Picture 1 (cartoon, rainbow, N blue to C red):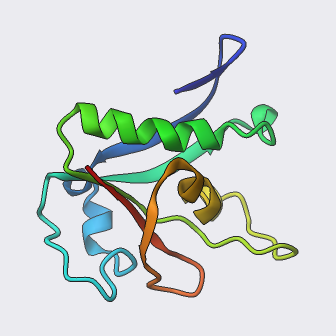
Picture 2 (picture 1 turned 120 degrees about the horizontal axis):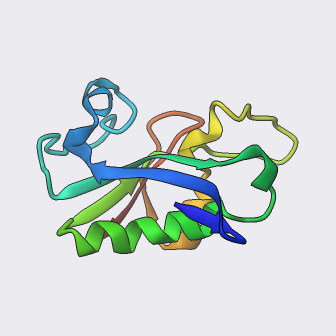
Length: 127
């Protein structure tokens, strides 16, 4: 959870990859990689949300950074995210950007490991 002046302003979803059945079935995280989908040691950030009234204040950045410590403290061996590639002048709807942007995760210390589509990347931190 992210708070602004004591009020809930945002949240993120981060758990072992295997806790997200849809993630196991979608092609995006796996295209071009040889990964053991059943590896519980790899955690995933599947959603970053900031409430409408709190957007534009940079809250996604501390949320993304917090996922690293959260996963590490709970025994993760690595953490991944599957953000969108944003481009100046190209609008992305909020519904698409719930996975975060590449810049947010890069700023948090994630490294790009693959680009399975023109608009999505897989980013990772190994512990």
